[in-house]
Length: 209
Image (tube, rainbow, N blue to C red; front, side, top):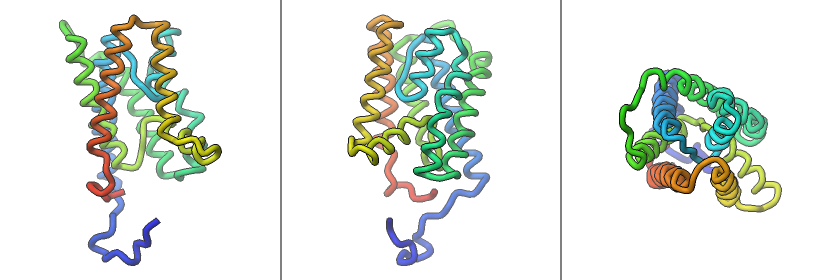
C-alpha cells in the first residue's frame, strides 16, 4: 500500500462526506433497481448474487426483494474480515435499498411495449452506471466478489475465475427455467454491465474514497 505521507496533501485521495455518500448510494441503487424493473419485466436474469436471487425468485415464487437481501447475508462476515466495517455497512444499506426499491418501482413503471433487446440494453447501461456510483462510494451490491477474494487468498485460485465460475453456474441453471433465447438475452445484459464497469472503473480516474 502506498505511503500517503509522501504524497502532497492537495494530491491525496480524500474521503467522501456523509452527504456525498448518501447521494451517491441513492443514485446508484435507484439506477440499479430501475434496471431490474426492465429485466424482471422481461423475465430474464443476470449474474452474481442478483442473478441467484432472481433464479430462486422465479423457481419458488418468493419475492426478489427478500431473496436478494437474504442471499447476501453470509457474505457480510467475509466482508468484515477482509475489507472492514465501513464497506460492509454501506453494502448492507445498498442491498437493502435495492431490495426496497424493487418492491416500489414496479408500481411506478409500466410497459405497454418493451422490445426485449432494447430492454436488456437499458438494463445493462443503467445497472452498469449504478454499480459504478456504488463502487465509487465504497460499497457493492453483492458478496461474490468478497467470496472470490477469500478463495484466492486461501487456495490461490484466481478471484476473477471464481466470479466467472459462479456466473457460469447461474446461467447454466437458468436453462432449467428459461428458454434459450431468454438466457442469451440475459447474457447480453450481463455483458453490457461488465463492459461498462471494465471501461469506467479505474482508480487512476477517480481517487476519492
